[in-house]
Length: 300
Image (cartoon, rainbow, N blue to C red):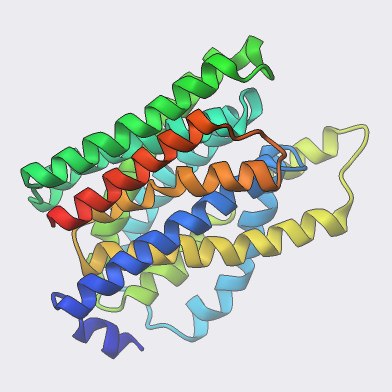
């Protein structure tokens, strides 16, 4: 598998696969966000997911993939710091605000910063058509967030604070997208980065989640929480793995922007799972988001 993956880097087959992986990451990331915002406290949900994917990754990291090169340990350390900050900010945003308000703000701000970061780190540039597509996508996402901000009635007293946390989260999304793309390109075998990342990344939030559970008068039932953790772990593997593989096969900025079509899928999951309403105006904005992604891809 690794040999085939390395062989298609820089080819049209690789570019086509990167497109598919970025869209897959969008769908799965929206589902992942829905899981974290759902039934349980966001901190506890994230803690259950993280400990599950760390334990599941351990045998692959230790016994299956090649051992990381010495220079990779510093990269893993920096990645862990960025992702931990991201998780704290995202959980805080979900704590104070509605999923369909917070999620578009996070995903709308991150592609703007990711495209800029990809230019400085990897020297990637977009042509005029691609810039028009990115602009349309970002405007659609922020339009959706603004509409939700104005019309959604729940969590009104904490909505501004949630929005601030969401904007900060978007910055960290761009940071980890760019840095992780650098990390997965810094090792010969990309699966080494994925396995060890999930192992190292999974032991920060669970400790805090366990402390929150310990202080609760009514603690969540173990089985539903464990089931959510297992489900979230599998989704995280394929979502995070897909976008990282896409950034190794093709441009980081393009993959990052395509992943942010996840707001369309997030609205669907918010309606289906969280019972949050989706009206005609929001549907129009979602079409604008999808059209922006299509224009950007055609421009490339």
